[in-house]
Image (cartoon, rainbow, N blue to C red):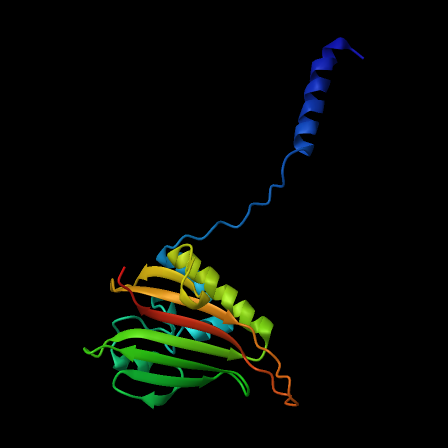
Length: 204
């Protein structure tokens, strides 16, 4: 071999080695920010059950906190945005019930202050399947973390986030998963697994 070709051969070998050691060129998905567009994208690309729990009839859930409602809303908003049927109608509290299918359901309770503005809400999703409830819990947790940052453990083992609503009302939101247990008696009906979401005013 001509010695003049050696530098070219060495360069070719070096290039081959470097190319073979090149890391996988597949880019990881870009981490979403808490911008309004990214949060809305995350909302509508979550599961159908997630959208039912967080959304409302008019699809405005991405801009609101829970079932399309928020701290400071008026009771009249419930009739427009809440998908369930009114079961409890009191001055300080209204309760709704929504069937998801023949066996599973959502119960939603909304609380009002002396000025007739919503001061809190409690939503309980009752599901037969442990895994479905757990999947919903993690979808909600990821969504809240994207929107509000890292959670901390609040009272009663709720995952808790501090946040401001779109109207700058301070509030905390809590999330909890309770696994269903099959009764020890002869009943063939299992207890429901539950995903609990609690929204209330905060002093922060």
